[in-house]
Image (cartoon, rainbow, N blue to C red; front, top):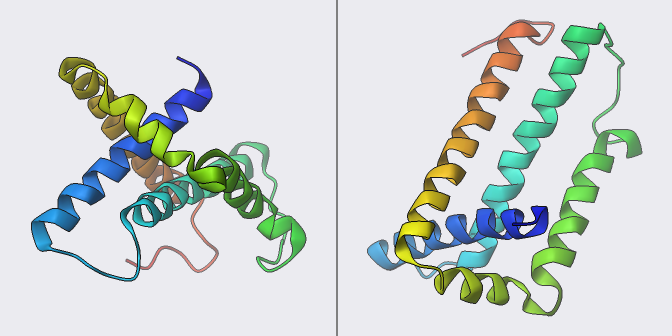
Amino acid sequence: MSIKQLYGYFFYILYRMWLKIDKAFGATGPFPTKMKALICMFGIEVWLVFAIALYCGYFFNIHPHIAFFSFIGLAPFIVLLIMKWFIFEKADRWKNYVNEFDSWPPKRNRVGTWIVILLILFIILNFIYSLYLNPPPGGLKW
């Protein structure tokens, strides 16, 4: 399985999760299910980017002051958004991923689902741990 296919499967799992939630609650909001899945993917990736930045600050003792609304501050997020557009939105490619992974056997989908869930938990816990190692200047305010 290629990296692009793994990334597509990550989207597929989030898409299926939101589809079940939408059907259970009868949601008819302004955001379609694919947008909810893409927003969740983006949020998880943002946590990963911040965790990597915090680890770099901790291990390499690099603490540059980068304004968030500068090109350098926004560049990783712009790259993520452009990448999402090319992989999923352009020519509705997300439908191909959904159709491809729907045809997989249930056992293979179940194993893939657990891998994605563990990956998401790993990223979230990794972000929390990176905040613990390298807290913001004012400290953590929970």
